[in-house]
Every structure is written in structure tokens, then in C-alpha cells.
Image (cartoon, rainbow, N blue to C red; front, side):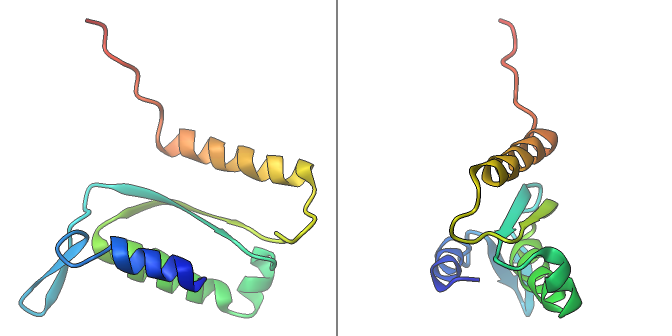
Length: 114
């Protein structure tokens, strides 16, 4: 995870906002909320899995950061082979995958008729 993202998480997921301690037990305060996690890298997911890095990413991000504050993980999308010069076609396909996942997990709320 880039340092700037780690800094953001440290500042947003703070004590009293995202979690608190009850004795020696940490209690997540974001229970009942759902997140859709998106990661990108130059390496395809299958390579990350082969070398064991995917397990590390899931342990740190899915479990430690998000689950520990009470969030329910709807999905973890990973887009690999994200490199300079990526084609517009591939970038648009990735965006459509993210859009579809967002609509699947967080359907638009329709206003109620008055």
C-alpha cells in the first residue's frame, strides 16, 4: 500500500471514529456499513497469489484494516497489469467492472413517491 494511502487510513480510521477500546478489546464502530475494496498493481492477481502476496494484501487490507473497524466487505476487486500506457479499452473495461460491482452491491436508492 502506498504511504499516502496508509496515511489517509490512519487519519480517517481514528480512535473514537472507526474503533474504540473496551478494556483490552478493540470494538469496530463502523458495524452495519459495507465497503467495496479496489486494489491495482502492475502484477496480475495470479502472480500475487503464486508468490503469497495476495494473502498478505487480504490479511492487511480486508481483515486488519476494514474488518477490524466493523465494515463488511462486499467485494475486493483487483486490477493487475496497470502500467503506464495501458490501453483506453482496458481502462474502460476496468471502470465498467467497478461500476457494475458498485451497482450490484449498492443499488441506487429510488426516491419514494410523496
